[in-house]
Image 1: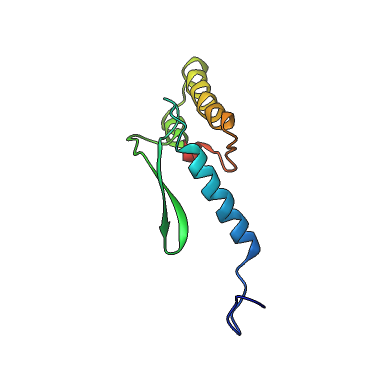
Image 2: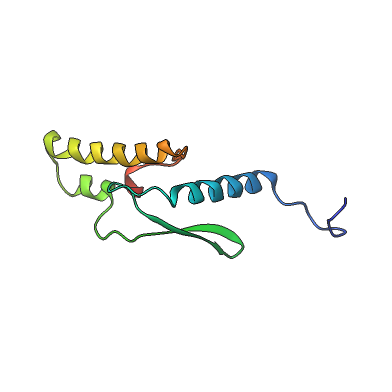
Length: 105
């Protein structure tokens, strides 16, 4: 095969597609500035794999916030509305979060 070393395994095409999609999503999100989203600061390589550098936000995840105590609906709804607004900002630039859950919010 041209361009490959004898006996070298071809890279996993699924991993290559995932990494390409991840890079494109991080680059697209760098320009998304919204009060309900983490700011994506940079795209870096860690051990040969892409990684996103994002702002640090102090406090518990949404999952922890929900588990700490039973909360009334009128306290929960505004938080979920903020989450939806933040996700909507990403959708506006064509980025769709594939693993959104309360532990990551």
